[in-house]
Amino acid sequence: MAEDLSTSRWQEPLIAQTINWPFYESLDAVRQALGAWLDAAHPSRRESPHRIVHAEPGVSLRAYEAATGPVVMLVPAPIKGAYIWDLLPQVSVVNHLLRRGFRVYLVDWSRPTAREQALGLADYGDRLLAGCVDGIERETGEHRVLLAGHSLGGTLAAVFAAIHPERVLALALLGSPINFGSDFGAFAPIVALSPPAERVTAVRENVPGSFLNSVSLMASPATFAWSRAKDWLECLADRDAMESHLAVERWALDEKALPGQFFVETWEQLFRANRFMAGTLIVNGMRAAPASVTSPLVCVVDARCEIAPPQAVLPFYAAAGSREKRLLWYEGDRGVSLQHVGVLVGKTAHVGLWPQIADWLLARVGEANARARARPGN
Image (cartoon, rainbow, N blue to C red):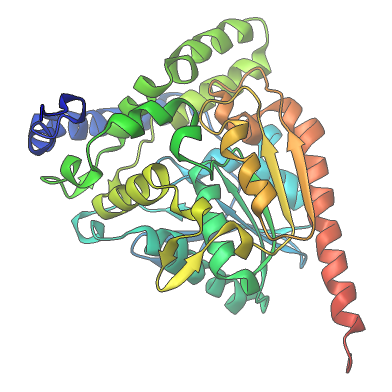
């Protein structure tokens, strides 16, 4: 029988050796140094004051000063800086929620060192998030939180909500792909044709952020190159839009490596095998499935997005066990550089979309409080 060369199995052991890992690591260092120089020469971001209320290897948790109110925990994607949620005062999700009376906490994934190379999906999707929720409970007394995640951060938040429904009062997913496999937008061909992820990381402890950026660029040059240039041109006559565009470009330099184990498990179990949607994902001995997500659910979808296209979100939305759901659509912005983060930093998103999200979250808190008062003995 003739060998099927399309699988390139004879090449797989060479994958890790042929990737120029030192180049990507050096590129990470260059990009971070350029970002630091830009910050010193002309600061392009203005973050809100915060303090660290919980920290352990792999993560820290930011707290923003506010009066007592509903507790919301924000989960960013682990491959970039968390401050995309708080980039500029006029387009800051943190500020928006603070103004609406929320107590805001922001997960900040750490840059992994050699000691964190073994952190995996069970750490990012369960243990580290649970530690953050525990830190919030120690400070506020609240056992449940409103949980909001963006991109891969939303995917991790959904996994956490599936295995710990008792800790999640409501779940908001913003441009977060859940249904992978052949429906994973621009990344589907790369996932389908790539060798097993453990071969890619065979000789490295962590996967450099610039390598991940290169994979993203190869998957969707329209998203990660052409649309950024187009956005810059559209901002030339709009000073405010150009300010936010440049701030996002600065943020894009903050690539973070991923622990090798987390990369392998995410690529194989989520991206390739689609185990979460299939209901076969096991995290720390617990099964994670869409039907296990029972907290109220709101999903924000961008019909034009190649990173989290509708087909990567809507099947999960339909399959989730939540009795109360809401679907919102985002139509894009000028001045966001990468449209995938527009839901966090876009002007029209803050004018039209975030008031709806905040209203929805506050309504869920009100309903939960009403149910608690109606219980016997209260």
